[in-house]
Length: 318
Image 1 (cartoon, rainbow, N blue to C red):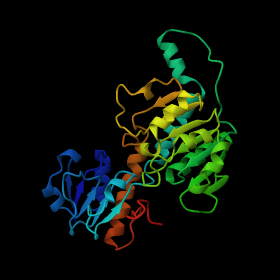
Image 2 (image 1 turned 45 degrees about the horizontal axis):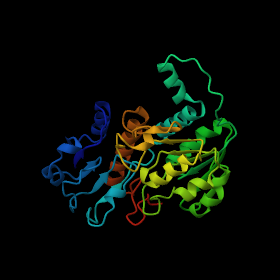
Image 3 (image 1 turned 30 degrees about the vertical axis):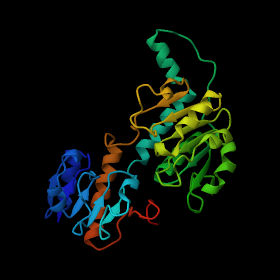
C-alpha cells in the first residue's frame, strides 16, 4: 500500500504510523505542495487533500480526513463512489472542551477587562460577573465534542440539556436530551448556550435573531462548532440591543475576520482565531494517530472504518 501523508502531525506520530505498517510506502507533503502525481500514485490519503488536484480516482481506497468537518468533501462527483471517506470525529473533543470553558470563565470573571486594566496599571474591581456553578447549559450538537463538554461542566454541578439531530437514550452527565425541533423550547431555560454543530444545510444560520432573543437577556452564547451556524449580522443586532451577557466565538462565518469588522469592538465578546482544536495539542495528535492506525487496519481487514461519512447527511454513519 502507498500512503500519502498530509496531516499536520509530528515526527513521533509519523514514526508510530510507519512502525504499524512496515511494508507500506509513505509519501509526505504539505497540503499546498500536493501534486496530481502524488494522488495518482497513492492508495490512501491521510489528511485533507487540496481541491486543486483531482482525487476522483477509482484506485483511491480511502481518505482519512484530519478534520472533524467533512462538508467540503461530500459534494457530488468529488470522490469516486468506491473511495471511503472518514472524518476525524473524536480527535478534538478534549482540547476544544478546555478552550470552551476557558472562554466562558474569561467572560464570567471579567478577565478581558482585567487584562486591559493590567496593561493600564489600573487596580479596579469589576462589580459584576456570572458563575457556571449550578447553571443550566444547553449544548447544541451532542457529539464527541458536546459530550466532552458535558462531562467537564458536570464538575460545576450544571444542569446539562443536550440537543441532537436524532433521538437517543440519556447519556451519563447529561440531564435531558431533545432533538433539534425542541431547541426553541429549551433556549429560554439556558444560562449558557454552546453550539458544537458541524456544517450541514440544516445548520447554516440556525442561530439567528429569533433564536438569540429566545435566550435569557443575561445568557452567554458560545460557538466552537462551525461559524456558519451563526448569522453574524443578527448576532450584532441583538448585542446592540443589550441582549446577552456575553458571547465567545472560536469560529466565524468569515475567517479570518476582517481587521475592520465591528464584531471586534464589543466589550462582552471574546474572539479566538479558530484555535481551540488543532494539532498543537498533544491529545489531538495522539488520538488522530491512533485513529489512523485503527482505520488502516480496518481497511486491510475489509471491516467498516470508524467515522465513515454519510454523503447524504454529511454526518458520520451510525
